[in-house]
Image (cartoon, rainbow, N blue to C red; front, side, top):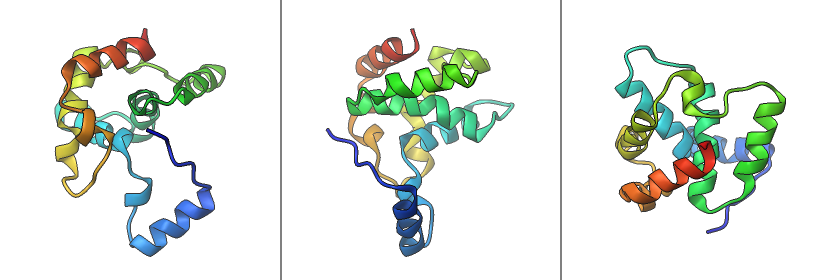
Length: 128
């Protein structure tokens, strides 16, 4: 699968046309919402989305996750769920329930999110 690269101006226009944030809300946002459902102390939505972006890109088959992870490291940002106190099991559970957090959204998790083995393999690849 290829990832569609959209300029931020185009994304803003797309959100304006849609009347909501759906064009900018992908699997990484749904994983963050899944984490919020599972955790007592909600973390920063932005940090959770940033970490989940690495996972989502890899799940799409993109190599961009490597560049994003290096960029986060350069900025001293969290790069792995463990960096913010989230276990692998909790993250994968959040990824599994993520599509239920916004039922009218379709992301890569709707296609690949039920494959526990794949999710675990992707997790190990990007967060090892």
